[in-house]
Image (cartoon, rainbow, N blue to C red; front, side, top):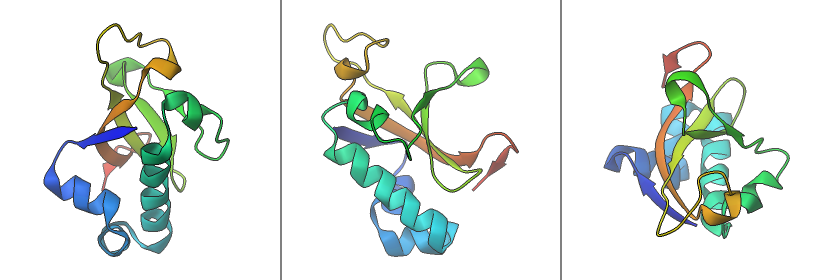
Length: 112
């Protein structure tokens, strides 16, 4: 998949294990860079759905249209699908670009 980032800072946090660990701690930092690597290696979100540990899920409420994957509880990696051409938001196999928004505990509303 192609990955886009909300900011340059977020890109560095997601792609550089040392920066991720410094920002989020060892466990979350490692899981973050692993999760981003899995997204990059996937051909579409359908591949991510088949990774049980990722627990890909569509968000609701104020986050409608966004997806999240689990990192270390309670933190999630939140991203928006970016569709090209005739892509269908309801078909995971047609989503092959993800715009990473943030790493967050959206249940506790504690942003990291």
